[in-house]
Length: 108
Length: 114
Image 1 (spheres, rainbow over the protein chains, first blue to last red):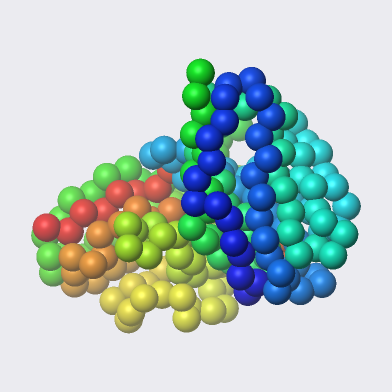
Image 2 (cartoon, chains in turn yellow, blue):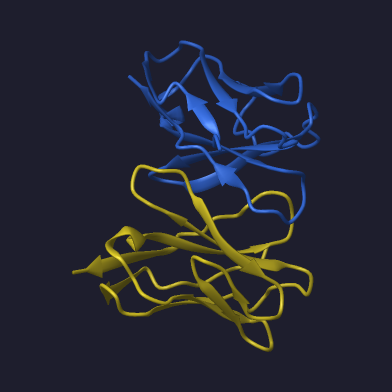
């Protein structure tokens, strides 16, 4: 599995955009980049995934670098409910290999 | 619709006892996954099922751990002769099939071994 590097923590103000970075320089050409998040006392929740092109859904946008060695999860307007640990996962098999993730704090 | 359901939500037991954890996947999902999350190890993969079959059991931490799935639906994870290091949150996820599809997680069973 590709190794990932994410900031341990980030902080954002409510209603501002948040850019969560992830480095995955050893990713293979067929690995999709998945993002999950985990709110306190809950199981992980799927956010978004992509291969090469940028992706948008109702929760977030995913920007993937042209060389695929990094990606950025974009929350367009952070809310207090977005406070969670965000995991970037280059997926090469059936299992999800969770790293330590980024703990996002959202302040009013 | 109904999500992944796990029971019990909390379980406290004495060291040496056997425990059984249950997972009800989303209806129609053929792929089912077990993970555990502990303070020291983070979130780690244990085993997956495609239908009733578990092709790869190498993620299970020891031979005290076993899992089965019958009827392509409900799965149970059994831990025999529990040890204190088994204390963790055990999470179950399901997806429509194997492959690159999102996994839908339950809220887990918090297992505490006294």
